[in-house]
Length: 297
Image (cartoon, rainbow, N blue to C red; front, side):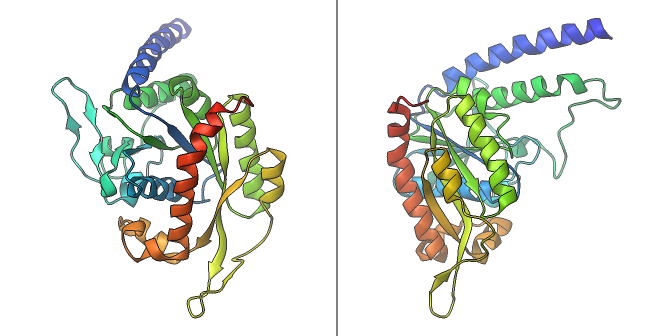
């Protein structure tokens, strides 16, 4: 079994290196890539990634959205794209699924049936030691077999944590990261680990997004704290980054995600949260190149 595992591992590593070469070729036309990350689930990272991509596209940019969460892909659900047929070129390259606002979308969800999970370990767990390598190979394969074309921005929705960030940094030369948190001690502790991982991987940080930062009164429009267990300001200051957006809580945002409708294409665009997303997109469009040019990483 040990000899078989060694052979399997060698094959996986060879396949992974080939996949990395395909990635470099596939993203050659991508001007900038933004990895949206968080230290834990449940902070609204995917919602931020989806609406940031839409807001960038609404600025007239050529944008694609890559759902890098292999185990829990949610981007197609949020954009109403589940069940879309795969699009394959004559040369075997995958084409992104057309989404709202002109987005191109790619996700493992398009390859799965219903709520079918990905199976890595095998029925007896025999492949468990190779799981990380298999996940890396699958991620590189999906990214590298997609014909992304010429893009102003590729937004990447990472899974919770930052385990995949160093890999992406090796594949995408113009990658920067955007961290998402909520104002709670537990979330901030987890997000700090992700920030440290980004520093270690020498991935420029565009800043910190504080989700559920406030609530807006329906009657008078006044904005106040939704809850305030902790402030993200000390964490941002400690890592030398800015809080680039404070997103007000809006129940309509969650309803839109569940319904597969685009929040920023309806009344949400003019809401306080919609305006905050538009301002975030404007900042990201200008911050990205400056972060890459700064010789601080």
